[in-house]
Length: 199
Image 1 (cartoon, rainbow, N blue to C red):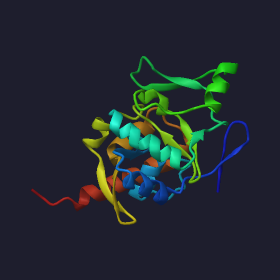
Image 2: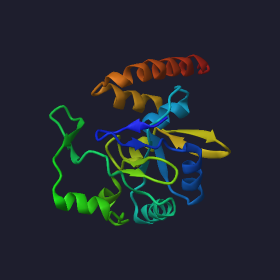
Image 3: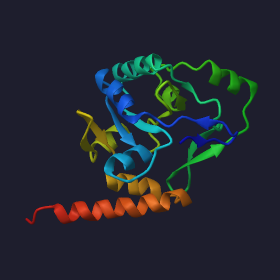
């Protein structure tokens, strides 16, 4: 199954176990966020991409850049052009813009710079499917790690965005496609609450 972008081109879903394994092997510090995080928590879905929020120190971004190079990552040519802006409600909103020739050229010649976290903030295509590096929109690495959950995925430990943080992201603003995910995440949240031992 593949997601179709605005221009009709198909995006290859991520091979989540392979991508997580490569990031782990390289020693990249990150938190899995977005739909892949919901899947890892138990929501039955096929994520359109693997969202990760990496630690932004230069050594870590250097390790991430090496992984991206090894999997032949490139900016998704079909992704919309635009930027994030913080609205009056305090939330980040995507502002879509018409690309210039310079924008198109920069996308085609993209190369991440470990000294500039913003240079990683793109939806990417790779040999192992779509990967979205999200440095801060869902929260910083430190903010997410404070509540992240360690899960065992194919023999490796992966830090995954908490159900509570996922719900906060999905409910503001709420999209039609998120309604089912929200319901299933809330059910997971309630089930975990029932399992907590009494004080």
